[in-house]
Length: 139
Image (cartoon, rainbow, N blue to C red; front, side, top):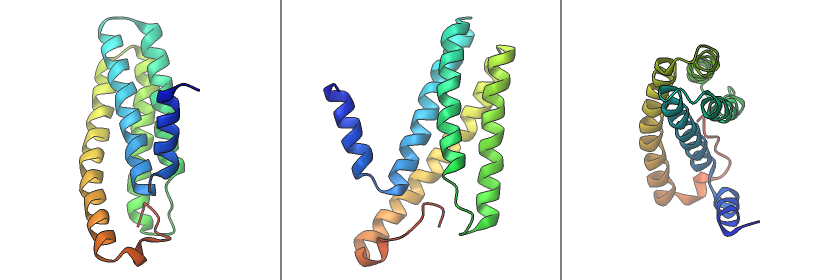
């Protein structure tokens, strides 16, 4: 295991659930951006591999949803992530960068929203650290 892998493993193992969510969103954005660029250059092999990895990240986002808290919000998020996933599948088949851009717009907006939520959670944990345990990232 190289130093970069060790650093990433340590970062993941010590992250709070809301931080892990952000890491997964960032991974999906990073790989989707690479796929979009590859599609624009008609490098279909790189696009295919990058879209596959982006889909894995989005699948992780979907599987991390917990509808025990705020089920309507979770259902809306799930629908958005399924749309993103489907766009990645269709972009891969159709070699259409526009579909990746549409999905990236959703992921980037979600990331901006999540950054605000994360900041608020950190502020609340600082104010009352004992209430931070046992909180799902969907609450």
